[in-house]
Image 1: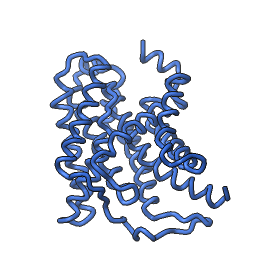
Image 2: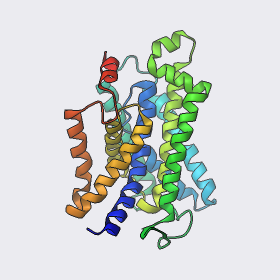
Image 3: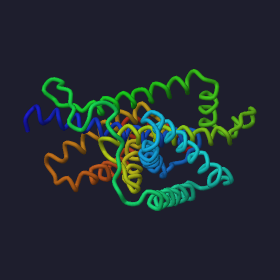
Image 4: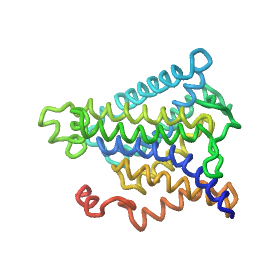
Length: 296
């Protein structure tokens, strides 16, 4: 493999790693506030991309993206209010089954609404053949849009959780929901807000990467598995580590194509997830001591 090829694989890996990272961040937002592993997170990415493609037929691209993000945030709120809020001390297994069921429902609804056709948004700048030459590596401008959006999301979330009252209340809810309720916080609304934020971020990611990866009614399942892998790899609850883990998984997948048939690309994430769950369930960047305290 030449140096140029290696750098090209690296760019491809970072591109796919961006979407894995954002899906992993969505897992972390809901887990941090509720302790729920939301396996419908990948469907939010799908809904964002598909809705934006439909809206773009009648409105300009920026308005289509805003509309897709807003409508997906509404879906996230409805999911929490209709299927999660009324549960009283549900078991982890019950929550996992509910979110998997929701994922299937959303996928089938998308199939009914949009059919099996593969769709995509136009490139935000340039077109399919536009590329920037960075040190001999050809990089699509859309890749820079994806990386910039990911960086913006991480920075905005850090500011939100550290420097806003609502963000601090969500952190308090994550630490101890009962204690937060006793202090007068509306924990139910904070949980709904976590689903709204997670859905909005997923939808934005679906719009930004749609020109590169395309979108279809059934892309959510594989994205959920890879986002969960990234969340575990980074240590559940750590959004910054999820970004690093997303880039790592994307890069491993990209380089695996050089030595394995492309059909085995998805097996990389599954193998990595199984290895982590056996050897280091707290994740590469997570603290084993903190995991034990949370379990206690």
